[in-house]
Length: 373
Ligand code: PEP
Ligand code: MN
Image 1 (cartoon, rainbow, N blue to C red):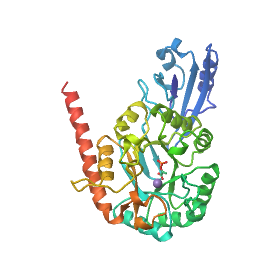
Image 2 (cartoon, protein in one colour):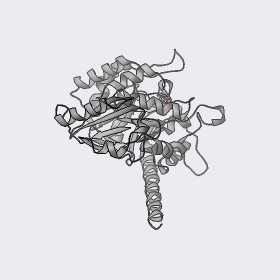
Image 3 (cartoon, rainbow, N blue to C red):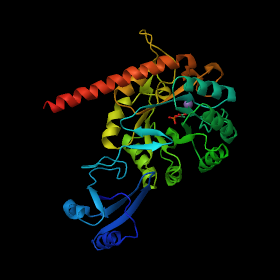
Image 4 (tube, rainbow, N blue to C red):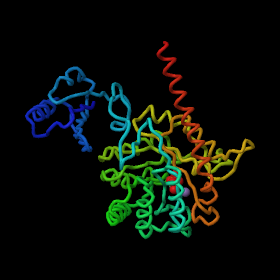
C-alpha cells in the first residue's frame, strides 16, 4: 500500500510526525519513504510493507497529510499501474515531456565515429525540427576486437554540437559507473549545453549493480532496454530496480527479442508489447526499430522494414523512437547496415506523423464507442 502525501508536506510538521507515529504502531507493517523533489513541488510517498491486506484504505485516507491511498495490486511497486492509481505517467526533462501520451523521436548515430558525422546528423535533425538524438559513446560489442566507441573523448564535441544545434536530450548508453561521472563532468565543462538520457542496453538489463548506481542518481533520466533473452516481467523488474533506488524518470525500451525464429530480421519485433507495458506500468514506452530489424531491407510497397516496424510501434501507442541514422552508413564503425540515410529523414518523419495521427484517431474512436456505451 502506498500513501501519497499532500504536495510539499514538510517533514518537520507536527502532522507528519503524527502520521509516522501512527504508522509505527501498526503491527507487522514497516515503512519506506520516497521523496521526489520536482521543480514545482516535492512529493512524498510512504510505502507500507507487510500485511497491508488488514488495513482499510478508508482508515488510511483520513490520516494527517495523506492525499491519496494506492493499494498495490500487482508487482512493480513504484513504476506499476495500480488500482485507483492517479500518479503521473510522465516526467519532464530539459524542456521535453516524456509521457505515455507524448511521442519523441531520437534519430541519430548508433555510435559517434567522427565529429563531422555527428555534426551532419545534428544539423539535419535541427533542420527538420528535432530536439532529441541518439549518440553512442560507450558501445558494448560482441567481439572484443570491434570498435568500442570513443568514450569520454567524444563527449566535449558531441555536447558542444548539441548546444549549437539546439538538441535538448541525447540518449547515450552507459555500461559502467564511471561513464555517468564522465558524462556529468563533460556536460558541466560545456555549460550544460544539452541533456542526456542514460541508456541501459539489452546486455545490461539485469546488471543489478549498474541499475542500482544509475537508479541512485537523479540528474539524468534513464532508458532501460528490455533484455533480449528474458521475460517481460524480468525486464520490468529491472526497471523497478532503478525506481526503488530513487530514480523514477524511466522510459522502457522494446528492441526486439533474440531468437532464430526472428529470421530474416536481426531480432523478432516485440512492438505488440507497447500497450502491455503501458497497461502494467506508468512508464513511457520506447521502440527501437533499428536494433529490432537490423537491416535496410524493404518490401515491394517501397517502404523499408525499419519504417514498417516504426509505424507498427507508433500505431500501437509508442512514446519514443530510437532509430539509427548515418550520413555515410558504409563508413559507420557500428551497425552501418541498419542505418537510415540523412536524406531519408523527412520521409521517415512524415511516416511517423501519419502513424501517430492514425493512433490518435484510434484512441478517439475507442473513447467515442465507450461513451456511447
Ligand atoms: C544501442 O541502442 O546502441 C544498442 C546497443 O541497443 P541494444 O542494447 O538494444 O542492443
Ligand atoms: Mn547499435
